[in-house]
View 1 (cartoon, one colour):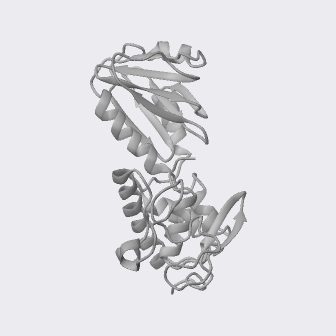
View 2: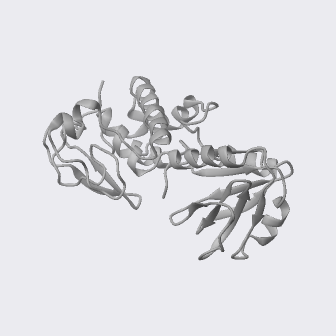
Length: 271
């Protein structure tokens, strides 16, 4: 499933492509036909994201998209080609358009419904209105592990398995640490680091988490070969030597998701 930076990157791209233009909205597949008809021909006011949710804002309605595991947008030029495959929603502007396939959600909401949806989400590190104290209030009272809490979209919106594993490693926090055992002195730099890492993800279109001294060129090692791309410390590196201490990276399962950490670098929470 795409992590939050990917949705914010899509919001930027769609904003640049369609903002202020009248757009054609259709549903070649037919499953979003009624919703598409409500915004077809309307002015595209803006696109924005909150966590893993994308919103196309029109004067009278808002299209909410959640990509889920299989959803994806693809771009096309004008004149628009014939739709290929199961296109749930097609948005066409003056200079091109996008096709949406396979989302978990593609629906029209009113502002009240959007507000209710956003109220269920935790703060998003990529939004200017994010309040990290809201996340801390829940984390600091919870017996659940910090690894589980970072993936709970009601606690913190947007972080996924990659950012979860990497930010905990970068701060030496064992993933099974109960949230209530974290200190404010640990949470505050962890949040700031997550903001910086995710902002870089929006700019670059991939997740890079290693510091300059651990880049392949600096260490004389081969670049990471993985379909997810990006240089990381522990994510999907089970059994490989830690880039800092050489200990084999550990893996396990938590709430149905794979967990990665270094047993040495993340042995004891920092004071």
